[in-house]
Image (tube, rainbow, N blue to C red):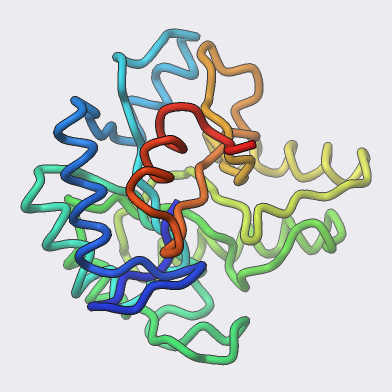
Length: 229
């Protein structure tokens, strides 16, 4: 799970271009292969295993720097990725974080395809941990509707902003029913652990939080073993 890519800056949400290049080179040198969402969906549906050393690279929030910096690197290494888009902010900025960074427009999002697959990151970038069942349904419905209105190609796969899911069992169950009714096939949290197949809960897939503060050694340990204790 990545967020921002900048020329040189590195912080908890930002990897630098040299850092991302080094990480992608490590993946290739160690025989990791990127997979597309449809392949993952089929493996989950059929309770099958993915090929050894399969990895899904994801970016959250749809920053312009994903187009300018991440796309060329992915293309150079022949890798694919997924971009999770909060649709209320297409062509705007990350209002949930002080508008510090520009977000991709609809036309810019089209430029990412097919290297990037586009997917759902809620409409308003809401933390579902704090939402009612009705609010979750309205937000997810709008997320899909805007993708359709903009005529953007996308896959019905979701990533929870902040990794947040409702704690109340009734609200969480209502959210899962909404996802199923809307045809959402998979959902990603954070978790920082490797996903073991066959998958037991398609709406609780885990991702590794890759930070700009990670050394290449730490990155490799995360990819190989998951959460660092």
